[in-house]
Amino acid sequence: MNRLNKDQRSHLLRVEVETSSLFAMTPILTNLTTLYNFSTSETYYSYTTLVYNEYCINKSERKMTEHEEEWRRVLRAFEDWIEYESSEFGPWTGYFSIENLRTLTDKERLGWMYHMRDEIIPSRVDHCRMAGVALEDFVPFMPDMDSIRTVRSMIDLNHVIEDIMLKMSDVFSVMIEEYKSGGLDEIVPHLSELIEIEEDIRHHMSLYSKGFAQLSSAGFEIPSES
Image 1 (tube, one colour):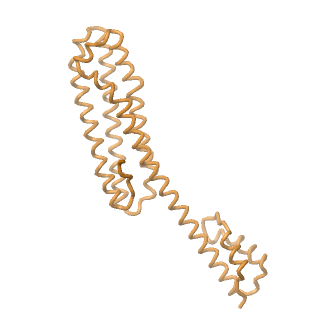
Image 2: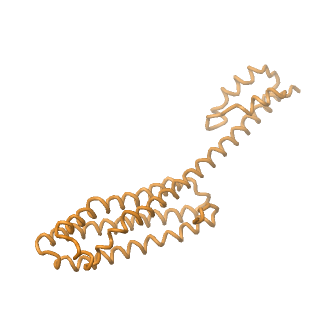
């Protein structure tokens, strides 16, 4: 039987297969066997097996790389969202307090309301959506149905939180009009409403911890806090 020599086996390991099935690889295999002048079907079978095995290994490695990259993308999306909450959104919530709002001028109060409605909240919603998109893209890499259900529940949670955030934006729109017509006293009830909405958002955000704990149990590594 004609066996592959060392150079031929070495060359084989450098072959990069980009096709998705053994059937699609047939022309490549035929060209390779012609190049090496393999004359027996047994040799052809051995060489085909080696090429196919190498293809499976490469495919598995690519799948693992994609799997890891998508998981990192999920973690980055949530890290970015958390950073936005603490550094960009959080400081502005101090004016949910009527005492703090009284320290501002009329122009500054309106500026705060417009800024929250037109810039801060839309950016907050975008961060929430990006986390949801990352989770959606991660679903195909789930190893089992339990993991799929976990990620799907986290995606559903994203939609709930986004809706609550948009509700906060609607409250600011009402506040702007009522402040223009009636002044600070007119918007006091809405400040309490904002506080309730924010508490609801933070409650729902805390529910992600359950999903991440389940994914961690499934083998997805979550970096520890330094």
